[in-house]
Length: 462
Figure 1 (tube, one colour):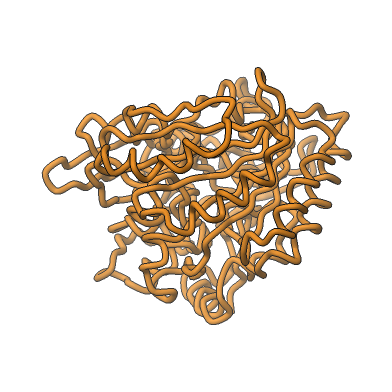
Figure 2: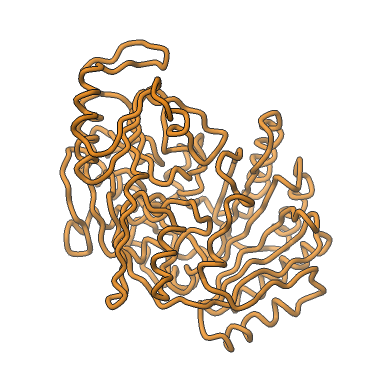
């Protein structure tokens, strides 16, 4: 196999590519093929990369073939599940994309309360199948987010305080490692690798399917309460006290955002996954606080609340720039700083600040039980610029960075890996405890010593 200079940076031997195309059930897409531009696009519109080859796998056999081909090529390798990472890790320049988006199999066991899903499944597809049986597990809140990336990075979602992170509900996984081996991993089969997959990202191979523990979740009490932006500081101070005593059944996010009808607002989104009368009591202080502009809490199917419509919120192709940190506390000074930073946003229609309340079941798992080790965290801050024009890149990026810097006195030296941006390689260690990172680096040396899978939140081999 040869790689030589070409319009797109490299050119692969046409005969070798043809042999690859005839050996898989999926498809091989090159720069001159129709559909190439659609195939290389990812969710974040700021990412514009041109791979030399896209291998769209139809099953495990295709993944095995693709990994061998990619390893022999010597080119960079990106792995795409849902393609939803803000960092754009699912595509690369002048390399090979192993695309799992055709792998859509889902099987629900309603008796055993488990589900097995392939790596191309999105949370919208997963929840549709599990909710048919009144079951769910902690998952993403945007329907087009892939299950693979969210799970491997940890998995924050609206059921996390009751049922733990997504990775806490992972029972087993099938994986193709860099040396081309297919393995099933679990707490009893290759437990070291299973430990690493639960928070260590895509560093150890390509996971082709995930088996999850499901829980009875049918109707929930969910929605939001919206207050004018002038009440933001007072409302956030209330949120601090309210969440301190919140039951594990309740997960809430505080938002400073622009509402298309109400203008800039302070809002709390929440989901109570438990008995309705207890939910009414738990949410009453939130719903009775102050004089809200809107109170949209109501009983509804979990799926209807959990899956944000990507046509109106975080649509595919919109430009996104994010930064994030776990918080130490919601002090009065932190609250005033956060509100002031939102007031300084270049546009309150395209800038969003979110404080996610964690804790609950997340804290009940030992720090060394999974690669996701920040188990004592109570709050996470996400700073988001989204849906802005390319001409406004500089202003929005500068605001996100300035806001992140202003919040550092109130932040921990810790971050959720799924929220890391493309330029934040120096912060990957902050996603783990020091001993956790060392253990992951040793695991990386065992399963991917040449760092074939490095286009991710990369953990270098020890």
